[in-house]
Length: 241
Ligand SMILES: [Mn+2]
Image 1: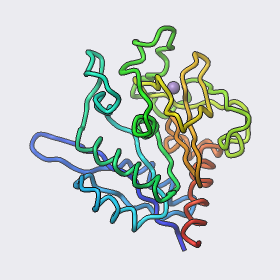
Image 2: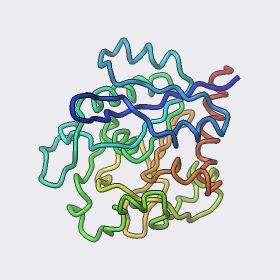
Image 3: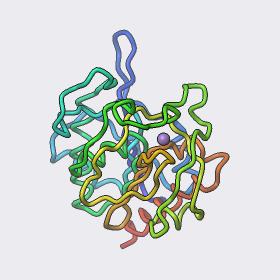
Image 4: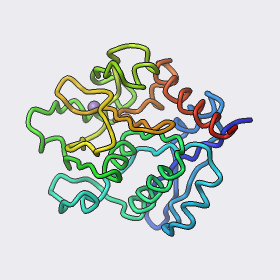
């Protein structure tokens, strides 16, 4: 029995149409470790429907994408803030609160880490240039988005250490926003050499998010596929109990 893994989508636009899309690197990684990927459309904002979606899945992956509106963490939009999709923001923030209420296994990736931190009361820098001493290498050029860009040091006592199996690992980096204040219930489980928080985790069955893209590395880097495996195992256990 494959546990059903909800994967959040984003709006992909062209001239006069709009898709709710997911890159197949996410669905492939979930399939590879024994999960059944289920793409979640953004089409709803009512709390009751968020609950209905969560009723059908055993774990939730929050994917990468545009910037969350700074109003969610009490700021106005600054000049170097990127593209915003407020429909997606509202849907995902409600999903996080409802998923926490159900102790649903959660894996956040890139934007997913940022939305998790904000939904739980943390804040962001709207661009890495707003934080002194931040390495511009966090924003890799598009053609290098699947290549390791910098190392991260993993917190020894964290859940992430047990999954990755080492104290330091090389990761991709295609983010221009970073965590400023960490949400009270989260702790940093990986940090880049310049001090940027690269992974967070929290209490409960499985609450983990990374600033890099394990789905882009999973084919060539077994320790990144292990992240999906650990998450899907928890979804499977929850499904069986
Ligand atoms: Mn980075």
